[in-house]
Image (cartoon, rainbow over all chains, first blue to last red; front, side, top):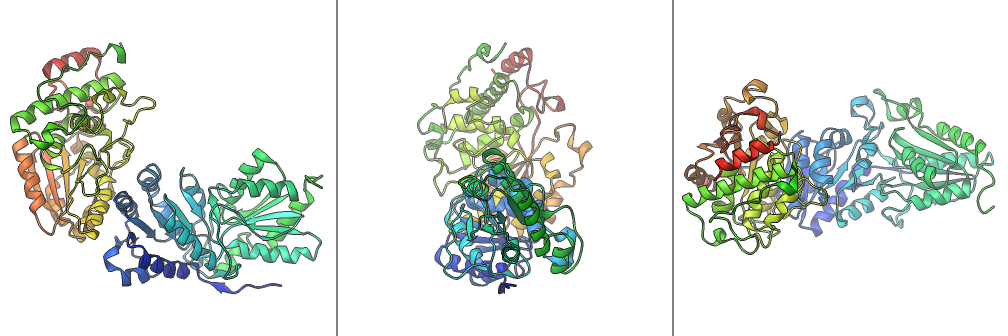
Length: 320
Length: 296
């Protein structure tokens, strides 16, 4: 069985943000008393005049960020995903999304691998919330290498961006020469049997599941959907046509996440059987690995979904 | 009745040209002239809401002297260049009272006066709640409690750039029920933002009822003091005291200033004054004609 080296996405973010800050004086950073956890303390130490802590007052933070953006700054706001997306949703909607202001929200501690802090700390709605805001660009990097490039890309694009990162280290699925292309699905493993669309922390497990199931005769394609809004409709439609079945894999609630987004595209352009590996509800305290297993996001769960999708595969496949 | 039957606006002597740099910007109007401008603005507000068939008149009428003082005597702005980087910022946090703001922006020449009749209509730049697509509007609003924080961001940006512009935020008193106001108040004092001034339109009426009945704000000035603010109180319909308060706020060092401006909701129209029924319900044709007579 393949295994990947593990690395922290939030640490990669903090270091990248510092680099960006050195070359772009318009970048300012806002935090809510979690700055060591989000690694924005690295920026704060070097640029104290461009760093503002507001304590845990997320509504205030988002509106302040909007005011800074409207004045020409490029604010990066960082806190935990539950506090950055759920708590100030009204401010995100009205102050940032509606005027399409250039605010970057980079949240750590997404998903359930935050672990022992329990369901209140498990961010399982944030993709849905972020994607529900028209004009918001939403990125869930699959590893530390992609995080670095996604953060740089976010700093260079005009408009609101949400980036979703994790507390614990996740598998490094890319090489150093990987090139991130915003808005384009990232084909990591080619195959003709079933397409796995995975996002964020689940790309690693999806690749392992694909490799393991290859020995059972199912040849899976694995596509890393790092950008959730805008969605790469072309790669979804093409894969539906070429493989005839889809499995989506995400560390997020089943409603409004990657599975829903993919179904929206296939439903319109090329309906094929679709299995969703996602959370069915709220969780509990526990170790990350225990939670992944108990709540149905493990390698065996992905393989089970692949087999179901393969059995329901639409034939004949286009082009065959 | 309908928009087409609405009487045309009678312009008075203090009305500025709808385009070009406003006369008042080069030659600040006297207090007497400001009184005339205030009447003109109130007529515009009423007409806008009557023509639109909806809108918030009570809070638009109570804020008129505050807006007129700012736009004709205080703010460093250029209506021909609304995006000028070093302009003073005015943020209408009580965004439902945008008819008052639109009236003053038109009077200053940010857009043509004729555009006021498009308020709340399809394809208009004058949205039901202020949005940044309107020239001169700094913030998209519509959910209360967010403008102070937004202004705080503008003020921080000025500090980072060592720019001398000043940021003004107008809050409603009912709006101060929102917790975010106090998050912002704490933060502005923490950062010692003396380039930020808040004005509270203390008209004592919110959507449903009197503020004292919905949620007590008093001791209101003491709350701001306790949050670390320089607190000024003024008659919100008296130009001389308002202008003095703005002068004093701009000079005050190391702390943000709040000006609690005592006002009357529906000010200027006898039957609307201090009457919660006129927060958001538009005037009937009879009310409108009576009101316009009072504003002759």
